Length: 312
Picture 1 (cartoon, rainbow, N blue to C red):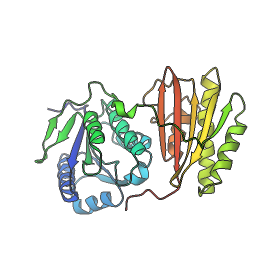
Picture 2: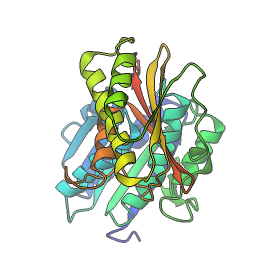
Picture 3: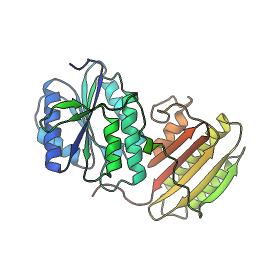
Picture 4: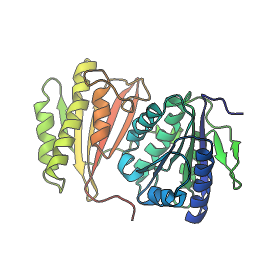
């Protein structure tokens, strides 16, 4: 028997779209029959296609395009929290598939980190969350990481079985915390200690050499400034900025000697004047943010795409 206030974080491994659609519909109809509000967050038009098949089913459900809310996986937990808050006091259901064809290896690592952190962020949430996973697209290592992040899985008959899952809520699969690949030798480098004007100027000049739109240039400058300001506000030494780009994206990396101890930093809303708001803002404007942190220091790598990465 599921505890009323317990999270059920359930993986569903599939190999074809027909199987995925059938299991999602079964899961959705079961929840609606129980009076559980339902959020369907799938890539592209898939959420609307499921909604069309649910048709006039009794119950309340909402559809979101995951390519919008989950472009950066760090944005998904705040979206889920908003849905839970809207239905406080009720058990709810979520269908949450943040992967799609064309995701980069870096994005997949952050997706697995997100799935692991769901266990920490919502351990007491009265929620049953189904996470479809297309095993034909992911590497065996990525599928293994997904398995470790989900305490339960859906079988072919729609039943839910325990898998052992993570030993501790929020336990991060080790492949998601390995050091980031080194920036290329062509990366521009700037050390900073007190003045952030050169930081902003270097990011803007480099970004304007690319096809990044003016509004996105401003967003990237803002994001890097927020991270560099954290260096000056929370460490006793300066930091280093590196900027480079290729045909697909522009990347900015900030390294300093700070240590961010909260694993949910940047994924939880804070008041605009509160600590942690800056990293949250960075996640809202960047397409991907990778962070590695510990007693040795912190690396934050921010990505802005130069091409359309939406599923076909």
